[in-house]
Image: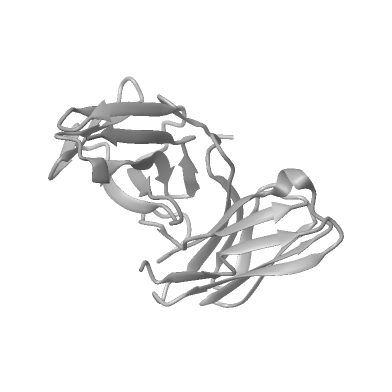
Length: 114
Length: 111
């Protein structure tokens, strides 16, 4: 295991539902990330947190709302999603933000929006 | 957005053959070039990485070749094995730049 745990592994939700994705890292890292992985597309960086402070939001729609209560936990709150939001959502961590360092990824949450 | 372009999209290689995946980048500020390997149901995991002060880095059967003037780098997998079948992502980053990924190459190694 990489030390980054994501739950749930799979999620099916309707367009009117509200759900949350959870990520926990056990590596003592200071930076955490949310990525979106769609088929045949580059991993899309969504949000970056450094020591619980959001440092980047890559023009992500407001129906995605991140929360970082402490340096070990990261959430992605979802509401009124669209079918095109169906994808694998990956959480990652690194020692520091914006440095040339290895990213540690969780196994992801496979999201299906009906 | 700073792009990293990766090719081919998919690759089929016979066991024992050489797998080659290529990437090109635009931002000359990038100075860290990792390759990630992803198996089905798992997140990407770092396989090997290179910095531009060297033109080649080898770890076991995996080699990165780096051409700074052309802004290109490639992954070579020697003696490819069925267990190497996975999706491979190149990436690039630097201080003050978040990591940017290529679109991935799905490698299948046939027995």
